[in-house]
Image 1: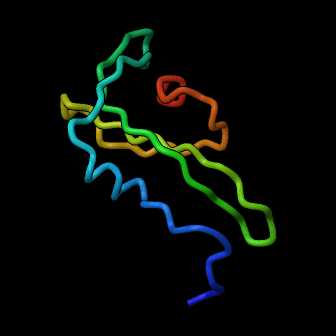
Image 2: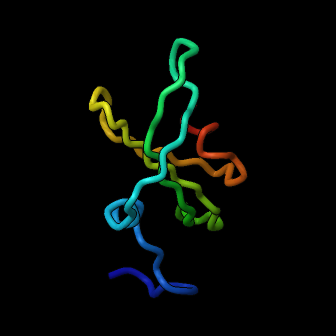
Length: 89
């Protein structure tokens, strides 16, 4: 369905990468209220586009809180030089 892929193979989705990554690397990040929190953080890059615009690089960050007090979150940014800790904070 739709037009054929322009270039290259399809990259795996963030969900697929997270499902196959073990062990999950842990990082200490700044948290609300000036505290820090130890979280499992998985990151990767991909591409995104809007109809009629050029393709742009996208960095995604998956955050898993081992304490169970917060749900898993996926964050996306076009600032691919940003470190995962900065994106989560």
